[in-house]
Amino acid sequence: MSKAVETVETVAIRFAGDSGDGMQLTGTQFTDTTALAGNDLATFPDFPAEIRAPAGTLAGVSGFQINFSSEAVFTPGDAPDVLVAMNPAALKANLPDLKQGGMLILNSEAFTAKNLTRAGYDGDPRDNGSLKNYRTFQADITGMTLKAIEDMKLGTRTAVRSKNFFALGLVYWLYNRDMQHSIDWIKGKFGDTDVGEANLRALKAGYNFGETAELFDHNYEVKQAVIEPGRYRNISGNEALGLGFLAAAELSGLDLFLGSYPITPASDILHFLARFKNLGVKTFQAEDEIAAVCGALGASYAGALAITTTSGPGLALKAEAVGLALMLELPMVIVNVQRAGPSTGMPTKTEQADLMQAMYGRNGESPVPIVAARSPGDAFYAAIEASRIAVTHMTPVLLLSDGFVATSAEPWRIPDMASLPPIDVSFRTEQEGFAAYLRDERLARPWALPGTPGLEHRVGGLEKENLTGNISYDPDNHELMCKLRAERVERIADDLAPTEIGGQQSGDLLLVGWGGTYGPMRSAVAQMNERGHKVGHVHLRHINPFPKDFGEILRRFDRVLVPELNLGQLVQLIRSRYLVDAKSYPKIKGQPFKEAEVIEAIKAQLEAH
Image 1 (spheres, rainbow, N blue to C red):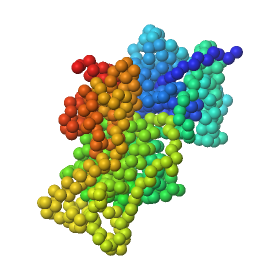
Image 2: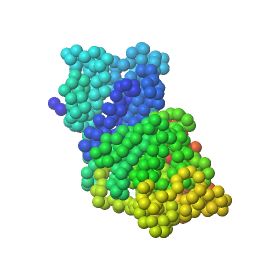
Image 3: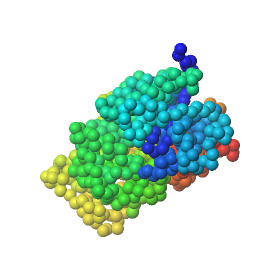
Image 4: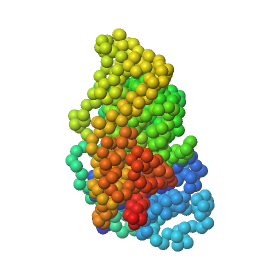
């Protein structure tokens, strides 16, 4: 007799365990399967900052949260409805986030005296009443995994590694997910091996346990979401950036070159693009950040669509070469996937604290356009936009992502390439009237490739004479060139579309954001509008220059609030540029905003006036 099925609209699940327990793989498999099931979703992988913390300790806890729904989803959820905790450390680190009355699934075998001590427990939380506010289900996940594969004669250490698939199978049954995608993935990944067979058995054993055991009296169903027709794939922000640069290369007709030095959390862009040599992509894994950016600059000089990827510490090392690209007025996209700093900081945690570095982190007067991606899918379009600006305005461009955007995932509608506007590129070939720094209406100089007869010109970091590009120490010329370079960046605003305003178009309060804070801000504004408040939302794609209509939009609202994952950087730029009394709402804990946090900040501003 089959168990009853309860239909729910939205569910947030968090898988948590030791960094060696495979929680990221478990979450990714559940995400891919949920996307195939037709739900809208958003994810939040949370990695430990240490490469390999001692097993069973809080520092080594790895988590993966997915929020999936039959309605539109913009955040991975403020608090999980379900927590799957593979050991005591995972329970202790994540229990404060679980909703009151939420479901708690524990791997009972892991709750040994040794593991409890490692996690910092004085006693067993299962026995002291600390879990009374949750629906707790205990299952010997480790033991049942070993039982399912005991005849395979695998070593215990190897066999135990399959327990994440047992947990995955159990949650697949709990939410009526089809296992076939994961079955196919295991077969494709491991082939006809003992490891593959062990994972398959564990997956099916977990599913069957949910179906047959008396632990659960029913399971749940989340119906398909109503989404715009089209072809979709599940995509992370780093993957979307890679695809965006591939698209930009096709749209511009240029060869794509990536010069990069591996750094968390940007390395996946290098890994992703390295797979596309068949499309003419050239990836250069350099020995250091300076070599990486200089390699990209050389590729730009030779006529390629040149990009370099890094995170905050790497951007500091690239600064001088970015200034050289600015002096040479050559196109290049510098991607900074921001992480918590300063210095090495917390490499696996998200932050938005590199904005001032992007804006001012070079010597001299060196303005560079800044573009920001707001979500995993949006990163595709941000990459195209940054590439367009670079090659049409002949300038290096900084593209800001962040750890949350980079590693999160969402369903993404695959665009028709024919629907994307081409990126116009022209190389100078005519000798007559040529001057290296002769500018067009955008103040962009000609892109003259080395080896073109009659178009030889001087390159280097010394100040250029206007028009000729010869070395100049003339003070009036230096001031003129600094102003021309600044004006060239400002003229980019002439090409920008009108700014989109979410929520109310004018009223009591405008929420302004950028980057990966988009989801909770959009959701919070929708909630406040439903409650009758006149709140609007602007999420900036372009930060330098600001859109031309941004100042006028700011003045339509009585108050301006700027939530940021830093100590208030964008708000400083807004206040200094527009002289408005914008208020900062900072958070700098290595974690993204929650919708409830933004709502409370909005309410506090409204109640203060």
